Every structure is written in C-alpha cells, then in structure tokens.
Length: 361
Image: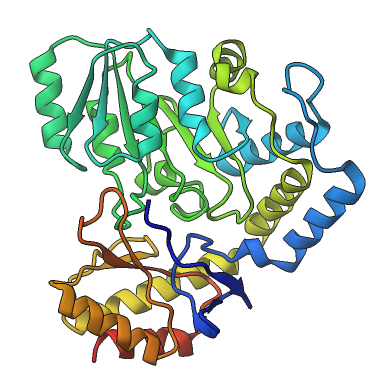
C-alpha cells in the first residue's frame, strides 16, 4: 500500500500539510460534527462518566445503557423499526450477511459496490452476480434470465468515488415480493432526503424491503456503524452473526458523542440547508465554467484530469490558492487517480470562491 500524506485537521475546514495551513475540501465529515464543540464535550463527558471500554461482548458482560439509547436515537432519526450497533462502519454489511446466509437464491450486486458489500456477498452462501453500475435495465435483464428467484440486491446508496446515487426507486420496482435490498448507505445517511434519512427517503420508497446499513463516521462525525431494519432482523443478527457475538462494542465516549451528534442534526435544520446551498452553488458554477458535473444532491464532486500534465498543473494551482489538493486513487474511480472534492456545511463562500478560481483558471 502506498501511504497517503499525513494530515492534521484544524479549525474545522483546514488541514496542516507540510507546515502549511490549507483549506480542506476532502474527507466525508459533511457537517464537521467531528469538531463540533458539543460533540467533543460529549466525548469528554462520556469518558468521565462511563470510562473508555466495556472490554467484552454485548452478549456477555459488555452491554451498557448507552448502546440501547444510541440504537433508539438512530431508529427514531431514520424512521426504522429497530437499529443495531456495530463497532465500525464496515461491519454492518457483514453482520447482515452472516444472519441471512442461506436465505436467498442469488446475490445481485452493483459492479462498483463498496468492498464491504463485496465481502458480505461472500458470506451469503448463494451465487453472486454483478450487474452494471447503477443500471436498472441490466438488473432487469438478469432477473428475466434467472426466472423465479429470491434475490438480495446489494448496492451503495450514494457512491463515495463520485457521489452518484443509486436508482433505488427503479430497483424497488424490480424487486420480487420475497426479495430484499441490502443498501450500504454510509454516505447517504444524514445527507440525502428531506430530513436526512438517506437514500430511501431521497428516492421516496418505503423501508419494507430495504435493509439500510450506515456508518457514524460520515454525516455524524463520530465512529461506529449500525443496521437499520426490522425487529426480526435484529434478533437474527444477535443470534447468528459471529461478528456481532464475538466483537467488543463501540467505546462508550463515542457512543455518548454519537447520541449528541444525532440530537444536533435533528434539531439544527440549517446544517443541511448550508450543505445543500454550498453544494448546489458550486456545481452550478462548475457547470457554467465548462465542467460536466452530476446534477444531484451529493456533496462529492470528482474532477478527472486527462493526463499527468494536467494533474500536476491542477495540483499546483490548488496549492498556490491555499487549498489542499485531494488527489486520490480509490476503488471505483479512475485507476490513474483523480481529484475528489467534498463539501461541508461549514465551508464559507470565500473558500468556495477560491476553489472555483483555482479550477476555472
């Protein structure tokens, strides 16, 4: 693995990089909750009141009232019947797959699905078939070819490599009555939809046949993950998931902080308004400047250089403008790498203007 540069995030929208303080349009802390004063206070309070670590599985002596409180807060925020915590954002898909292994005839997975879904598919004990990225047509053709099956559709909600959004409404229409959708909504949760409930709310579809998995490290700015679904699914995971059974749960200060983060996002409607405004303003300006940018609600904007020379030039323009150049190589994106800009509710108009000027030179 080639190590990425060491960065120290400071002042909510900046990083320290090689001795310079640069504006930071990267990461996925969409509301900068990881540096919100009330969230940081909740971490300290949680440490003082509860200690650091329960040091045991929840099924032995490691359960704690904070876990139940956090699960209740998540279920309420997302309008789900129940929520079950995981100790990180990668684990929820694996926990679901372990619980549902052997219950489906086929797993149909987006060809660019997150690696957590790819790994989860291996645990389902059924044939795995990839469908073309965000293609209801290809998915429909596969279903016709296979005939009467009981499938599990597997897809990201908002794809992290380019901010594109799954056509979830079309997938729901294709889904057989006995099928389910495992939706990795790590990047859509808290962002998409009228109230931030994620891709299902954005698509206007019911939750009945959808298992929504989320992380707490993006929109909520803390750490951990969760499965949002039915009470029966929760019981099945607790009974059958080796990962859940044998895993030490989330550190208590982080659970306390996540509860506070949910409270803030639910109460402060201006956070989402500012994020949407920053995203829309920037995308309109880029499109007017000749870039072809997806017109959606995602705050993730990829810029793909045509060659190494253009990459070097843009990298220098950003540094000259006091902006950290977020050039990455990430699964699902171009193999040669690309710039992935991510906006937050806390970026100022002045910062957005500086980025636009650097890109439109």
